[in-house]
Image (cartoon, rainbow, N blue to C red):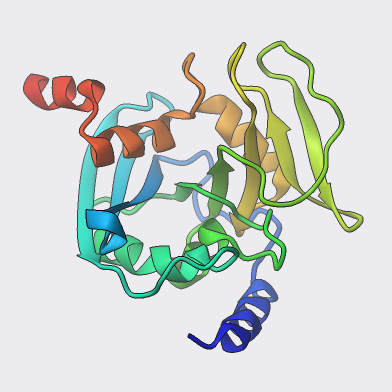
Length: 222
């Protein structure tokens, strides 16, 4: 694996990321959610994509793709490992989202190319990253109440926001992926919270990927 070549590709792609709002439809009609995981000891990459109507946040479509994992785990280069399965799931969709929330980083990445940015560039759709842990950057102490937020800063630039989405839960790290500003990324996540730690698009993507009870109940109703 040529790490130097991957690094140069990251830097080149990061330079193509649009960090301002560039929407074809706003407010959106459909918001997508994406979640990537691994099965069989990492040999299989699993990507789940869901489509929710907005603003009702009702689930209207879900797709799961499982493909052979194409590269090993290398910290800082996860998007290369994750995006092939996302592309496979994307190609199955009947409804194309107006924007996409990805479980992972957007530009809140040392070289400004997390999976939300990388995939957003590939499919040319406005994207944002909703990560459950910090990869890089610093922020001021966060208040305890839900809705508290602070800018996430790195090397003198704002790369996203830290948001306390639910009381007594660790915060989320929200960053624009592609064709979106940090402020809009935060606002969209806030508009998709319904009492859980995760916003509905990535919460449903995780539920579909992991066959969680909420998704199984939804299937039974259908």
